[in-house]
View 1 (spheres, rainbow, N blue to C red):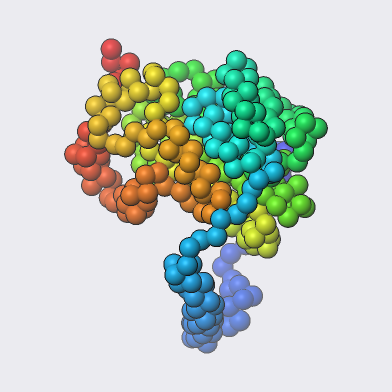
View 2 (view 1 turned 90 degrees about the vertical axis):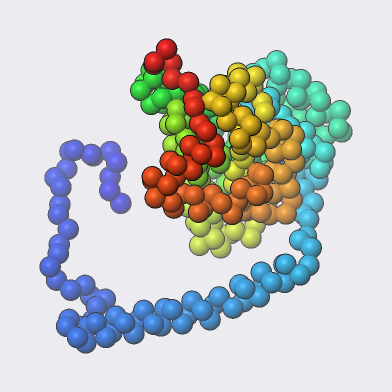
Length: 339
């Protein structure tokens, strides 16, 4: 692995080239024939191993999915004091989970904890800046002392500033990435190994439909949510290759706009797209998030109808994608730089 501590200090070493690799066995026609044979073998192996996967998929279609019991589990929800995070906390409490509410808002965090305890489970508030690795490391210790090890991790904390990449200060742009993406890296790094050791865990990342559908004036936000999408896809693959994806499950959630903060709703109205895209109630999204945990869904699109279309959209030619946004979303986000 390239050393990240000696960048610019050690000379660049160019990779050797011009010779056939050892795996090619032979150069020329025989080498090409060997390559074609190995590719054919790989294709045949793929289809042979595909059959049991298809069989299991058909069985799941034919019978209802089993619902797991998470009563007594400990859940940690970042950004849990308000909006979607608060509703996720309450939904998890209704399933019997004990909840660690993590946020910077002490007042609403305390109220969320009080409402959770009314449901007969344990809950504590933790004031933490999740963009700090040291703070998250201390959080792990504090949650373990009060509630025990974390079984369900919900990375929900996020900010959505409506600004161009050319607006705000460098610190503003950096903070969006730190809260929306870097915090996921810290929590995954610190909590996953314990889940694997205990053979029980579920990790949830709240991404966004912006992970597929970037629009103007949310550049940094869209970049962070694309990062969450890539992070969770790669992380799920890593868990699978390590043979632990049967004990530690992952769920990535892609909601459309959520009716939370008043200023966001006002901004959407000014955009001209408030009546063109689904504006979801946070309790509806929270219910879908907890459903993703209970039924081990790897990806959750909210509303469900957008799921089949987002993959198609991101593969459209740019000119067609711009036309689709103009005709169907009618985006018109105010630009303060021109006011």
